[in-house]
Length: 178
Image (cartoon, rainbow, N blue to C red; front, side, top):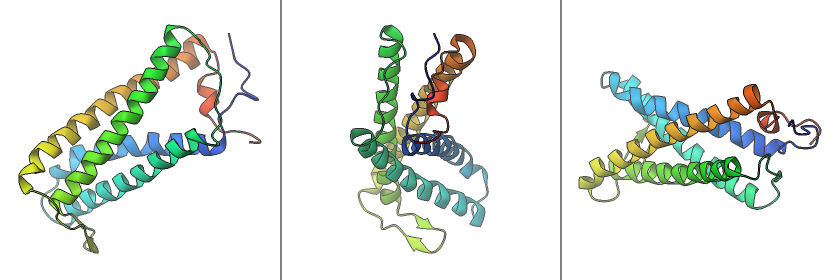
């Protein structure tokens, strides 16, 4: 059954932060997967610098999302109160936990390595360099897990939109008038 999307949309801030996150996550994953394909030099350094910088931006967005969601962000009633609602809740919380984990591991990785960002600013090298490989491994594993869960999340949104036609995807589209 379609839901009323006129009054049943998320607020502009929630929508904006959702789509910024949805854009940053795959972009960061692509940078992380492809940066080392470039020969050592300015291109590789630039891509890694962009990856680290956008990772810090994602950290700020995640903190803002959590604070907004806990405070003035619009909460909407579930479309389904059964197993699908439970699965949606678990998926959303799993995405938040994975995002927090990948960001924390990424920040730890950046400081254990001591990145030089765009040749303009250097992150200090902090911690035991023997932690580089394990932290990087966990960071990569968590990033891959996010991509799997995020693709499932996107697939579910598309299923709601095209098969069930219940208006769930429109809730996260442009909020008109509020």
